[in-house]
Picture 1 (cartoon, rainbow, N blue to C red):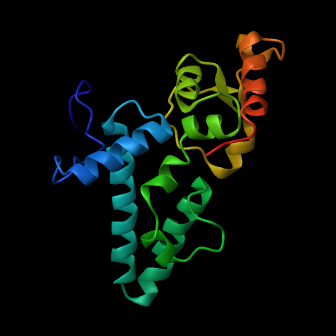
Picture 2: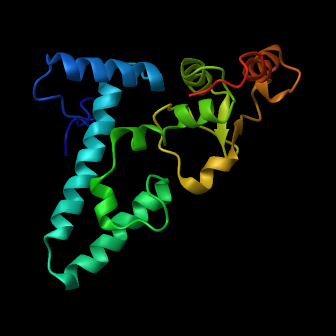
Length: 183
């Protein structure tokens, strides 16, 4: 059962941690998605590895067992918005870690324009200013489902819910001042 103070590790570290190309690519992803540390990136990589491993094992099964498990895996990935509606099992093998990182609450808050930077998006989430369907979420790593995406707003109890809040005025003015240059 396990000790409640020692939760199970949800990530695997790289096999070759000191390869400069891996270190460089990890740093780029950390900056681009505003991750706090490499453990958050490794968690997404481990999740991707598990999805791809399931897809490989399903591909090797006989057709009668394969159909049910394939629909379950694809259904989950489609609900999360990682794969499009017309995806097949081979698309799971083509997924990248960026596909998973794009579904994090922190990234979606930044992409929707509720925050100026990914780091500010993280701060707004941890301070309780962001809600999904009116429910405050404090975890920047929360994977947002496709149907929840349009319901991400400022929390009803947050001072940022007021359109006249100074921070909101800065955030709304920022894209116009930069000339629409986005990533």
